[in-house]
Length: 430
Image (tube, rainbow, N blue to C red):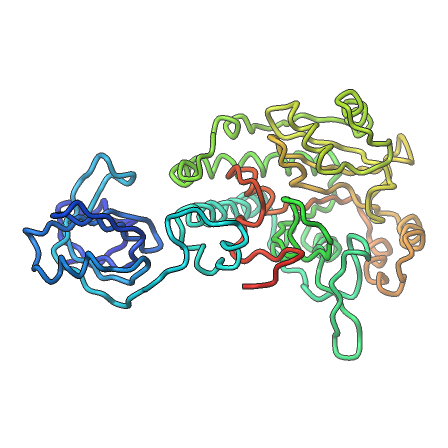
C-alpha cells in the first residue's frame, strides 16, 4: 500500500493507496457517502459504500465536519465524470483531527466576512486555483529573465530615500534615523546593472497610497529588470517578450486552474508581441474622442486606462509620457523636452497598468537638477549620482506588478484575491 498525493493519483490506477487531507464537502445517498477530500495538491472524490465497510466506519463518515483532517485508504479507479479523471473506492477511514462548526460553509458569504477569515478562505477551491497560477507566474518570470542573461540580485527593503515620490512612503525608525519601506528596488538595480549589466530584483514593495480601488494594495510584489547599454525600445521589447512568455506558460501549465476560475482563455491566446503601441499624445487624443476629460500632461487614471484598453484585444504600450507625471530619474525625449523616454503597458479587458518603466537619465548635471527640482535631499542620493560620475551609460528598466498581472490573467475583479494576505487601506489582519 502506497501513501501518495492527489496530483500523483494517476500513477496508481488500480492500486490501493493512502491519502491524507481535509474533508472539503460531503453528501450521501443513503447507502453511499461521497467525500470530497482535498490535500493541498488537488481534490478527489472518495466513494464509501455501506456494504463494503464496517458499520461504525460508515456511521462515522456520515457525521464528519467540514475540514476534518482525515486519513483515507482506498483503491484508485477511473471516473470519466471526475475533473481529474479518477476517484477513490474507500476501504478505510481514520480521523486525524476533528473540525466542528467550520465558519466558511458552501453558502454565499460577503467579501468582508471572507477577508476576516482569509486564513481559512485560502482552503477554498477558487483560492487554491489562484495561488497555483500565482506560483507559475512567478516561476515563469524568473525563468524568462534567467534565460535571457539577467542575474537576480536582491534590493534592500529598508531604504533612506524615496523612489516614487515622498507622499506614498511608509516611514519607520532605524535606530536614531528615519528609514522607509521600499517603494521600488529600481535605484539599487541601476547600481547593480553597472556591475553586472543585466539584473533584476523580485520582492515585496510598499506604497502608502490612500486608495480603495480594485487595483491597489499597500504591499505587493514586483519584478524589476534593469539593463545597462539599453534604450527605451529595448526596454519595451523585453517587457513585451516577458508578458507573452508568462501568459503562454500559464495557458500551458494551468488550464485546469483557469477553468475552475471560469476564465475565458481566448483573449489570453491573443497576447502575442508586439502589442499595440501608442504615443502618449495619441492616446490622449483617442481618450478625448471616447469622452474623457483628461488634460495633456496628466497621468492616466483608472477610468482612462479602462476606456483605452477596451478598444483593443491585446495589451497597449503607451510611451513618452510628459515629465510632469513621471519620476525625477526618467530621461527626457530628445525630440521634445516636455516628454520622457517612459513606458506603461496596460493590460486589456480594463485591467490597466501592469508595467511601468523607461530609460533612465544618464547625465550627472541633468539628474542633479532633477533631484533639486523635485525637492529631494541631495545627500540621500549622493551614491545614486555617483553612477553618473563613474562610467555612466544609457540604461533602462521596468517594473511589473505581480498582483495586477495575476488579476488580469485570472480574470479577477479585485487584486485582494491575488496575494495570500492582502494589505489594504482598511486591512492589516490576518
